[in-house]
Amino acid sequence: MTTGFHEAMRLMRSRDPQRQEDGFHLLLTHAADHLDELVHQFEQEQNDHGLRCWLLELIGEARSPAALPLLSAQLNSQDESLRTWAAVGLEKLDTHQARSLLWQARANGVISSIRHTPTH
Image (tube, rainbow, N blue to C red; front, side):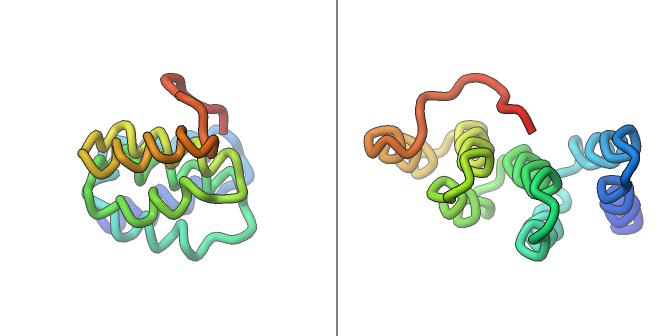
């Protein structure tokens, strides 16, 4: 699926919104299989805010404890969209540590309670 991953990323970087959506949905059900690649892409991407949000959403969809450091870091991001997607990912992860991070972020006013899908 590595070829599929690269094709999905190529589509997500397209200027055509439908192709971007197609690439995102190609990865959505396989996010856990490509967590390391998604994290790498997220860390490398600096220019496309929407793509960063999508990558963080996919990382959260992986529901992997290996994503905890990145989700935790983004929970404290200056960017509200990234904070929100990190919180969504931590809620999906639903481990003791993830719940503790969310509780602390809410208690500190970093995030509000979210039980909805944020906008890209």
